Length: 224
Image (cartoon, rainbow, N blue to C red; front, side, top):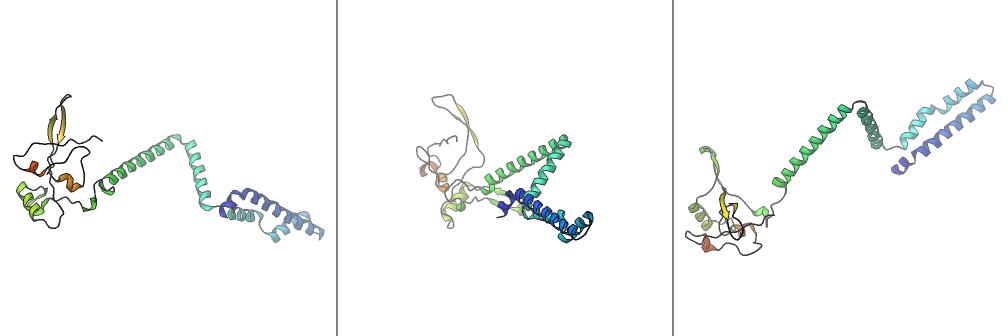
């Protein structure tokens, strides 16, 4: 009902103004008929009826929506300010644009790094293990191969353990086309299984390929 009154308020306000004027004129004529002078009769009618301006404001308020009125007043004030001070308006718009852009970039990074789940199977079950020793002044250290094998053999709290080297290596892919420089990472044979990822084509690594002296094999990732 408030929205309906808002869109019909001009007609309602005009009707109220006519009603107010009609009652004032009627009361003024009655006062003149009682022997009052026209000016005195009109003043007495206003005293009896009330202040017409206050009544019209009250009618206008009854058919208005507060936040829309405030928003429209702010918009008109902003437009007037922009016309009077175009340099100030351009500076404000530029600052707002930079602020909104910076917030968008920051939120995008936070969403990609912190909020967006990892694109792996059951990402909430994945953990990254490292060695931390604040007392000795080092943290986030990796495990030796021997330590990793001991942990894999004795671990009871994990379904599986896989390892990878943080540092990448520079390799060259050669074949039928021109050689291409790529980045490579060393991982354990079950690394993709731990992540729950299957190759698009071909197969994954085999256990015998993860032993010293095993076949030298590599897996090429797809460029997405």
